[in-house]
Length: 284
Image (cartoon, rainbow, N blue to C red; front, side, top):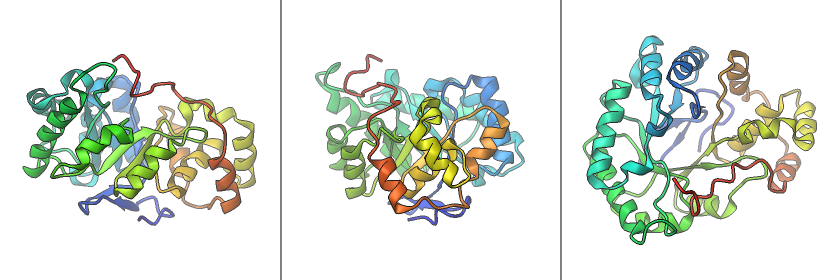
């Protein structure tokens, strides 16, 4: 596992590819906003940028990385195939479009954005397997350095665990009060790194009195506490902010340690602040 005390440290995926331990998320940022904020994030030392075809901002992200002056090989870029492109051929086509938007010739990580689920498709497992077959081919051809999934629960993951190349990452909604223990345990047992989208609960964590009080003990913000809590649980956080001061603040989490007692208290918080998007019931 990584040394979580160093901003340049990385988690090592099960194929030995390294992934910087703090990512920068771009969900809900339009192309122009993504361009401006990713440029700031890279200048401030972030080396892991998370985007998706569904965010419609890949071109802005790619431009920001190119104009940052940091070599492409030093910036870890993730994108995702969206739901309307699941399937074998459609995934291959979606991947080419993503590369042309980003103007890069490879991806560090490519994810299935949401699983096909039984409530919408009788052949949901086959759809996920066909998508995975396309991604596996691209991975074996060296065009993607690592492949994984997003928003998959154990029952979605099981079919993929029988394939030649197993998922390396599962990016899920994860923050205090939303720990998805069953999914996280399954991923740990199968050497799949868990990434946290919405580690600040879309901002809803920031006013939580328990978290605010705990953060104050360490002289840190509630956001910094949530990010560090993810890291100490072995989960890779993808905080998202478009405010320069917050982008900087979110990266300043390597100079303190949350005590075991406080970790336990945060881990046991009741459900709060989730998006309510359940992969088994979403209608998109």
